[in-house]
Image (cartoon, rainbow, N blue to C red; front, top):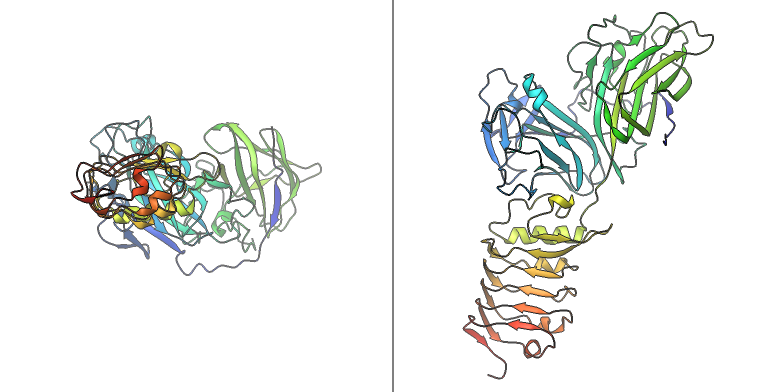
Length: 513
């Protein structure tokens, strides 16, 4: 198995103020009005999502963000794994901590919560399974670190083969991260899914903002292991990952120079995947302690000397699976036992890719022209493949293009945007049997088109003469519209073209008339 050796980081002098809330977008899903909680504003979600139903949870003990949810309709055909997306504005090429929170509350009138997928842009993030937490009366949350590939980012929920009732969500957060955080990760090709983040030797409530300026959640890991408060003399001012000072006020340690074993993270890991691991250490005694670190018997770092200013160990691609044991062993001759203050572990997710920007722009303009577009036309059009937009067929490979659009008999109204010209890889366009009006746009940039089906609509105006120059065109169905003007003679004489402009189109003048 391949292991990427860990790096050691001493403090990084990046002082950041804790006096202001993080640069964040906080969305209270299902809420109808803004609210202020802990001096931070939460927004209702109507501006970020175009489908779903707001529902209230009738429990008096819930925090405000858990008292409403947005629920999304489960399709009759479960094999159609359509996605329901929130789309939010972001800074292009910035890193964001994205957190989703779920509290079921029985909103679907089922005994157990639904199980479904969550997706960021075109990347599968994780399965959402809140069953155990809900049985214990608690909410579930998921965190990940993702790079914004454009000026917007989407978080989507989608049914999977385990889904038996409507997916739902309670809260959605986007927090802009400092450049230093997790910067050894190639975010152009990978994202991070949080597995565990703990403050060792601590048994209080979750450490978060304002202790953590990026509102990361540091869970307690030390119940029934009481540890006196430490850290009075720790002079740490921030590692690259900037853990909060409060994490260094407690520790796991042993008084004698003997091994310290830690079963962490608490749950077994998925089989044979890569993980980002960061471990944090600081010694407030002013003495030197040296120890070795192994993970599942594999050397992770040797002769670690922990000063008051603190050190961090991290590896950005470490292969793990199943239960994990971290052992800190005193180095030969050491008179002090080892210690550890905190740790983070993320699964390294390959980025799923993105649909070609030109096609995304074109499809969004098409959506703007339709008065009732398909409900799932949000997020990435092509990715993940099993969650592509209704009616969209896409190419394979690294350069993902839209090659087919079939919205036949979808009861569409509105017009066909001229921005369809952006879809330069389109082979097939099927929009028959709808209620589309307006003129037929210029298709001259769509050199790959083989079939155009616009029959049984309400298009008016002339047939674009530019269609005569499309050498690949094999089917052109325009019957039963309100077209007028002269039929381009080149279309009627075009070899191999199945061209239909009648019946219907009473104002259309055939060639030679």
